[in-house]
Length: 246
Length: 170
Image (cartoon, rainbow over all chains, first blue to last red; front, side):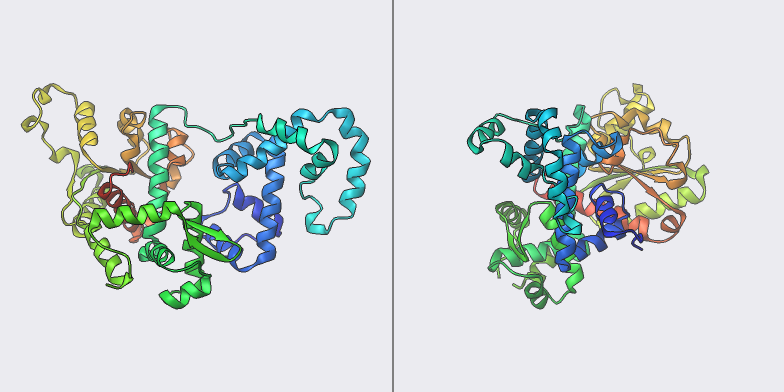
């Protein structure tokens, strides 16, 4: 049963991995069906990235952020932006513009009140070309690397198992969806559900896992097979001698 | 061939994979826990009909390894672990951790699936990394008594089998 928390706390708990597996699944299903909730997740994600860059998280929270969601190139890029701001902005600049921030935030909608405004602040403070040059020289490595050889192997094995599990779960529904997406043009959940005759919720859950493993790409509400997804399918077909082309 | 037929074939091929599976845990003195270990062995053999599912005490290295008789038990078990695809450990008592601590920091640790009762969650001595990389999982009484713990193990072994089929480190 999902904890009865306001949406913001719920999303934060989800991002930090504090929810049970059942609750996580329900959140993931809701992300696909509730656009406002999904938008909220993007905002909270930005906030956590900013809080991380500015050292505002507790140690346990920081570790959770490093482990759970600062792992994709896009998320690392956001962190680079926030960290560059911290590095290059001075106290006096922030102090002088604090009133401007207060005024700016007051004009935002309620859910956006805490939205990260630092990227917008940055674009007003620094000339675009100088900032971009500095950013390109900023290399923030935030992904927690396993500390020893056995941890490295365990981490690699877990990543591979998660990828394979995304194909096997729900009676191999993931593999079916991936094969379907490879053979057809990008599809919505409804289109996939009509072809496969499985509930939208199950499809949403499994698609989310496939997206997390980078086997499937999601653009707005449309899903397509990635190059990695196609490569994995080819490997499976080669290893088993079974073709998954219709 | 339809998708469904193709996937069914892949499923069968996966479950027919040649796997070496170890099941560690309480011996005959462990009563119901020993029965659970035996049940796990039966279920694994039934699902993966070409798998070799053994308890360590069933394995004799002397036939295959010169000087194996001079190895102490932990080192013999290290050989077993090296030869297996997955080692399921029923961690049913507080002291069980000391027996497998020998292997936990080795580069074979990724093969372990340690199943620990949740009442030992606070006192477990295994590195946090094992839990982080899902090599140690906690179960409750309901899961232990029902089929869900066994089903969890079967699902894990399926991923191991699929990974082994096309050479992925799992």
